[in-house]
Length: 319
Image 1 (spheres, rainbow, N blue to C red):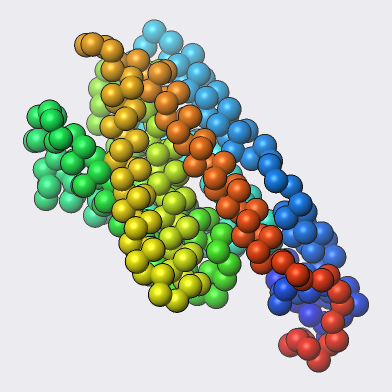
Image 2 (cartoon, rainbow, N blue to C red):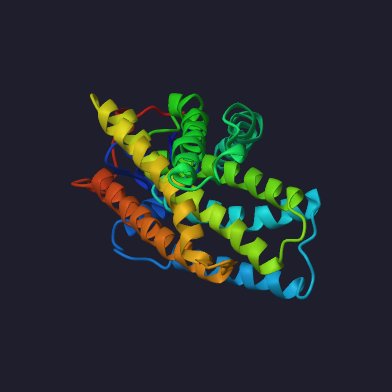
């Protein structure tokens, strides 16, 4: 059967059922969805995830009320997976013109986790031995968080995207850089959170849940910025200096937010996890709203001056 394949659902349609937006063929259903992506300035996306994350913190505190957080791999994986799943859905929804294959997104997520386990953690704790000097005061915590941890995390995100999907035809629009970078960052955050639960005894549920949420939000925010830089690197010639600046910005945000949360939540000899979580949530929402606005901008840019109209069969490959 002859026809043209929709770039989203990959089904074949007759030429009269296909609409071209820019240089991409869409079926009627997905053409409408693509156009809708450019018509809304603000959505509830991001706000919903933030509220659900706050509910997650409250639920963990309520479930283990009066007890210490269990330190086993199963609980660690479950607690780490919930916020990761929330933000995988969030970032995946930002690409409403031509959503990426979920298998590739999950593959980059898994690779981010593997790089964290096999490279970032050993480099942090064995090569740089941050545990031996990061608490000495002065600039030591900031050097550890920004210069070591933030840089290694963003380098792992870069590797997970640059040497996989970056090379393929699936990385074909600017928002893809943000989608894949955040997926990789969430993989790193998941491994960090599992390790946190397994390795820390006597952690109060509220403090533990807030720490898991903070780690997830920080990786999402920093990775979103790096994803923008990866898109510039992919689609704009001579953008290497811009990417380098973006990489440094993402690493500084990752490490800086981590330290800012600690400073904000510390009151004398006590630590207020709710205050720390509130600071992280507020700062990250700024980035998430920015990511949503970026997605709308990219969508409008792609479809600018494109008229939805049928095309002649010979203008495109047919099956």
